[in-house]
Image 1: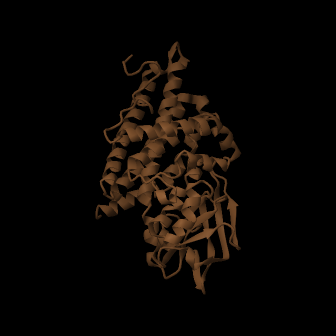
Image 2: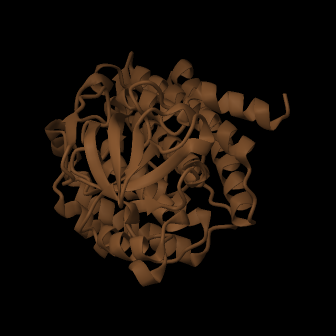
Image 3: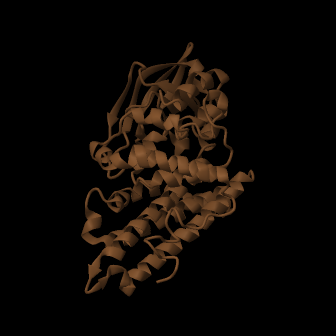
Length: 396
């Protein structure tokens, strides 16, 4: 047995894999802090929360206290101003270890809801909203997707008509993460003509008259509250306009790169979870007089899983380094999103094959990850949309 494989350790698991020179002592310290938080506050409850379809609201406050909610946000609003994508990678990886994407999606939903406010919102709006969200007292969701379309943001139908000092909003949103219990929603609406130029962003509070929600049941992400939103003559004060009227499309687009980097890091980390659990099982499981891991066909599965994970990790860190240097590598981040979710899909399938019936049982991390493959492949931009975006970036 190679020296790398002793005592159950592997050069491919979370603790012993190679980490490049971009990771500093600060990254390692943050990883240790987050590891302790996840192990203490999340891991013991994952199965219970997944079956219950949600987690206690108090987890937001605990996440804020450990610094999780504030990473990357200005100190004046209660955040920790870190302009380093490698902290994003560490956070995504450590959160993925719990294997429950729904917990992560709803607990950190403010990372898609709040950025438009921080990027283009007024100082008054930032001061009113951000401290409450980063402290864990309020939840902030993003509402873009509609029943008529998701990635085709430029053709959204929800309309906001100016009436004195209020906008009157009518329409609906679909598949909104955190949609049932969010307090604030960054909502894309049409205030002008067709296309990108007619889109604005509004901050809408949950208690506005005429604003209702319906819970949606899903294949995966069970612990995430996902909802359809309905706006029936909802009056929203003009002070809640995020940025300039008819220029909301830019505010929406600003966060897509970070979202795709986050989802890519999460997907590859989930693939690593599959490899870890399948490897541990194969070392202990006895079949036909030998360990399952001693069968060549199984060993080759592990080699292929590790190859894909390592290749994706290298690409992930390359993209993170380019972002750290001030680039906006749209095409590469799009390709990375595709590669990472395909790696996750492959590893979830192979791990399920290795685990057999045990992998099909609830309470197994691989079973949960297998259910969540599709939402990772579709969310943040589907494979088809990503590939087309790459082609356009290539000038084709």
